[in-house]
Length: 445
Image 1 (spheres, rainbow, N blue to C red):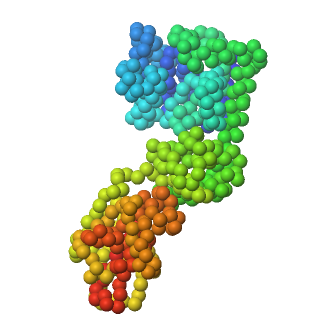
Image 2 (cartoon, rainbow, N blue to C red):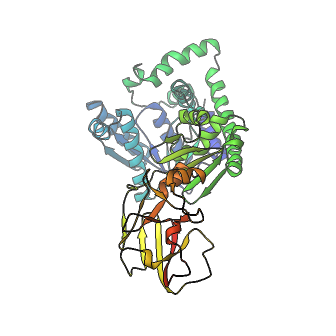
Image 3 (cartoon, rainbow, N blue to C red):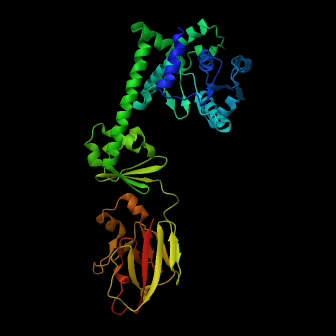
């Protein structure tokens, strides 16, 4: 059974977990797995230290565990570091389970120690059985492909150098070398899902196939490789059907629906925007105009596209006043530069983001505001015909998000001067009788 040490050093080298020059922080609880790991590190001659968390969950037993790990450090001549947490209190403060609080506190402290004392990575004693149990935990709770790859060998600065070994192999190594360790009775309780899988499900599987644990572990490795192919395909589709400009993204629904695994693909493309897997299917079945929300983004089904934008800050109804003589106004959707010109001109703006307005028709102060459902104006070029803004927007095929961003410039008598970025009102255009006019240039965000 001494070949465990040889496999240990080979596994580290094969997976490039760390080198002899690195400083390794060993997460040691006092249980057989982490204690054997500490012995293996000492035997291999790595620059390592023992780090122990006292979660204060088992009364005097927790303190005995800490003292045991301290004595282990002395026996192996390895530096020892420890910390204590009032885990129950912190779990309540963070509104999370005690297990989750212990996990968060543990890794937060490890990161602090690494930064302060210059350790290169944190080694945990997860082994093959842990990875298999994680596979079943995630499978039972429901997950995508990423939940089925088990525990990774390396994740950022966290390494698992015992992932090749089974629990039985580790226990046999401890017996051969008479390695003492602490026993945690809570690991035998089946009230926790992981323990229930360990003590009830896995034994049943081993009755069917004595090598079931190694078979599942082998499967998780293949799933991890399939996940890499999966991610590659997602990136290919992202480049093909998702276009981004600033904070706004537009996804081509026609091309999406022609792809395989449509709902899964949509979720993977937009999960970083907070899209939920259930929403992906709902979006595919929705009619144009439907809006879905995450905590950070909105998703608008706009004909053949899905428009994605961050949830807007503030309220759209804010009004901004323009006094006579002002030449720059900054507001929620951008800024407007104003320049006064004498006489008339035979040149006209080439963009809807610039207009020339007859100064004699203006009554100050002017107002920039969001539009209301009842607003109407006389679009330039429509021979004085009045049109409601909502109808104008429908004709212009503006999406809901685009409508929300529209601002209008309003005269002090209530008449709309300009639907900014879209159309000037015919009543304010310059004419042969114009003696001076104002040039408004709108630069949107």
